[in-house]
Image (cartoon, rainbow, N blue to C red; front, side, top):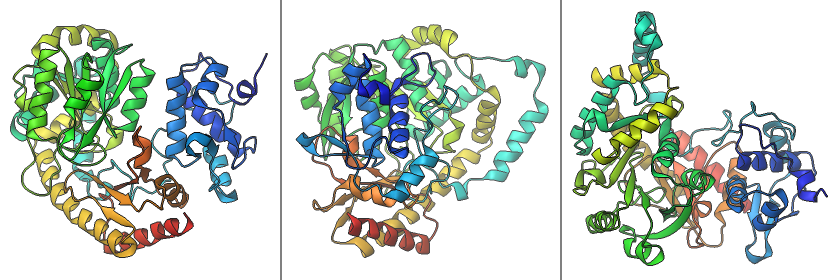
Length: 479
């Protein structure tokens, strides 16, 4: 017998699109077509998972995205509802953005935001207006014109060898990471790194420590891979290692953002770093260090990576060019301990044979000719300035209802809200105007965080900063 949920959420198990993204799209389409109306109660994750015959974690991932978009709202024990903040204008926007219920696998979902969304406050985006496009175009054109037959044929599962050499040299100089090119594997961004490592370390059924709050998309991916996520709280010193040990001492992996916690921005203290490394050594566990924007620190020099302290060879360093060059490049890399090189090479030969060699060549040229280091230096100065513009405008317009984080690093900051405002409601109202900020509450399993994750790298000048802050103020009034 077909249940109401199965009529509403029709899944295609043979599609390339992951199940949680199919559920996400079907709900948006149902709301756009008025099959679900504002204020309608949504089935619990347990109920929907049972009716659709899928894992509960898969449904939770879809719900997290819908809550983050402001399409669903949680009312505690009363359940989850279609957001009452969505007006007719929001419905029209959903109708244009949502894929139809019969969409095929080729119509993939956008986990980020639609291309038309303003990137002024969007977290995780470098300054697009300051990227050296002419240099990049010249390097790209040269590579395409001079590509040899051998290079056109070339497939290197571990990644383009000269690029791995350039990354090793950069990491030794800038991040304090001593490594050889043989330890480096090029990946399809950070999520591609996690997916690759899941094949090497066997995430299925494994217990993995993750910071709470922590990077939402990583948690979604790990759940989809069948991992058991252990949410470990943080404090002003970062991950509370003792809490992780108390919750799950037998965990075989911890994923951390020590240089710039995602999303709160704090730094993992030296004492906690040593405690984490000692736990990993004593328990034969691994630590994945996500150094997603560790290059950007606006007071003093960038801190050395956790990997630089790893005397036990338990840390896998994960980096990416998404924040330092541009996101759609989708080139990341991992540095593995010598003991994992053989296993990674074996899996790379099977799974890592489809990367574009030309984009790796251009990145290598960008680094080896000195453009990368000059670009980073320029961006540190620019981002420090734009952070001050953005934070000052927000405080001028929204104080005392908002408090901007004092951590001066990274490419975003967290603005804590007065408790009378719900971050999901403020985000829903503001993002209906075409923006893309995130509510921090959806990045945590706890209820103690209420704030906005705001990118500042694309706030071009004081006028933009003030105008955007005033638009955000209207969302507060509506909430």
